Structures are given as structure tokens and as C-alpha cells.
Image (tube, rainbow, N blue to C red; front, side, top):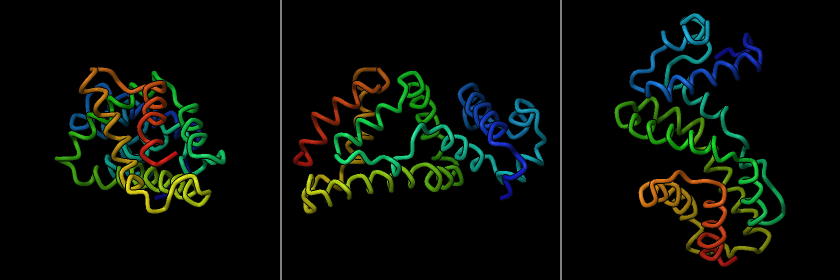
Length: 190
């Protein structure tokens, strides 16, 4: 897909509008017509640039990420996670959590959305986390045969989901940092 026609500023503006609309109406009611109207674009331009609604939504979600996990390397696992948390904003995290809950419902009816989210959002995050964990193993912080290594993602996702279910609160920096220090690091033997 050719993206060269849009400036980075215009692309960021368009992604922000897509996410705003998504929060307002939800994925199922989101249309390329509505996106075109909100962003003062033509539908043809949107389809030419992104190909489909799922691709556009996934790109907008990816663009919204404050930091790429693969780029974080402070020299320690605790430092890496704290660096990731330092780049997060509690207000944005709350909005993103609500958005992701809505998208998780939508993926059941839209395999194209699930595929786009996996390719552009989920897999890069999983790969980045795997790289952070591998560096911790390489440094000797975590034993290579530690059985908790393969469950770190599950623990993090579980913490995010459980906070909403148990406390009716979105996860925030303090909660996730405390959870990481109290649950994940000890499970990894750090």
C-alpha cells in the first residue's frame, strides 16, 4: 500500500480521528464513509492507503502506542519494564483499555480485524516482550529454563483484565509497576 502521499502529521491526524470515532460509535458502526467525512478525505484515498477498515483501525492503534518494546534496553529487566511504564500516560491507558475491550468483542465477528490486529499490534508487542525477556536471560537475570517465562504475557494481560473485573478500574502505571515488581519479577526469580 502506498502511504507516501500523506505527511506524517496528516497521517497522525487521521489516526487520531479514527480512534476518536471508534470510541464514539464502536467498531461495528464505524464506516469508511464516517472516517472520510471526519477526516475530510475521500473513501478512495482511505482504501488506496489502507485497503480496508480493519487495516486502517489496526494501523491507528499501532500508531497510538507510546513506545516500541523492542526499542527498550536499560540493562535490566526491572529497568526495562519501568522505562516502558515511564512512557505511558494513565489517562491514555484508560482510553486505550476501553478501546481494546470494544475491539476484543469485535474480533469475534471480524476475522479480518483479528488478523490485522495480530500482524500490526499484537505480534510486534509479543516479539518486543520476548526480546526484552531474552536479554534478561542472556544477562543471567532469569534462568533460561524458568517455567514462568512462557507465561509473562499471560500474567500481564491477566493483570489488565482482572483489574477491570475485580476492582472496576482501568489499569494504570502504579498498578502495573507494582504488579510487575510483586508478581512477575518474583515468578522469574528476579
